[in-house]
Amino acid sequence: MLYPPWLDRNAYSFDSHELDLAGGARMHYVDQGVGAPILFVHGTPSWSFEWRHLIRALAHRNRCVAPDLVGFGLSSRPRDFPYTPAAHAGALAEFVEQLGLEDLTLVVHDFGGPIGLPLALAERSPVRRVVIINTWMWSLAGDPEMERAARIAGGKLGKFLYRWANLSLRAIMPAAWADRKKLTRAIHAQYLAPFSDRWSRGAVLWPLAHALLGSSRYYESLWARRAPLLELPVLIVWGMKDPAFRPAMLDRWTESLPGATVLQLPTGHWPHEEAPAAMVEATRSFIDFN
Image 1 (cartoon, rainbow, N blue to C red):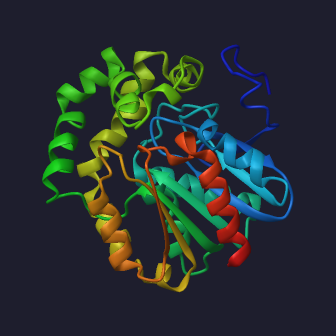
Image 2 (image 1 turned 120 degrees about the vertical axis):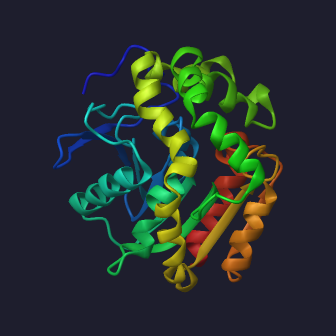
């Protein structure tokens, strides 16, 4: 494929692949290394670029597969795609089926949770183990802090600010780092570039802000089916200085998955960006042990 001029090929040096979905969307993905597969599922407003440190370190012993969700990163951006968590989950399931991924380690972050974790809940699941990073899989209704933020971001004012002020990438993302110096201009540019136009910010990014509360029934359905996670090895890595995904959300995971291995890091929302060495060590040890 032709790489866009803004892409930093030194930071993101992986070979690119593309896969066509039945609905007409084209998913871009990294497929690096050999061995037992690891599937990395990003959230918003990022793309597979966020996994570069883990891919580079783990591809020596594992096949690292990191797709860009439909509309994100280097994937296509069809105008008739719903861009809801359920729609992304369906596209991801088709992606996994087309690639024939089995016995995989599923790594999810942010919206990657409600988008990727359905793979682990399926009757014939391809998932062997799960790594959970600052994410959730239950309705946020009733959580005062999350509800307040979700009503602002997911409402009319939020949609306006997403489109015209790039709220998600220029304000929310930087605020979610514990050490903002680690979000350098060069790194931030790789996240800003895919959403340089107003249409995409309103049509691709904002629907997920709206879905924080708007997809509550979908989250409830996932949480009601969470039992298979109890049968899987689970590693939970949590950035304890995340201003949105607070320790109470980690507590809910640990209460529901008492057998999970837990690593708390003094980072913000992206532990794998702020503390990549710790993330690599924890993930490698988890896979080797389980």
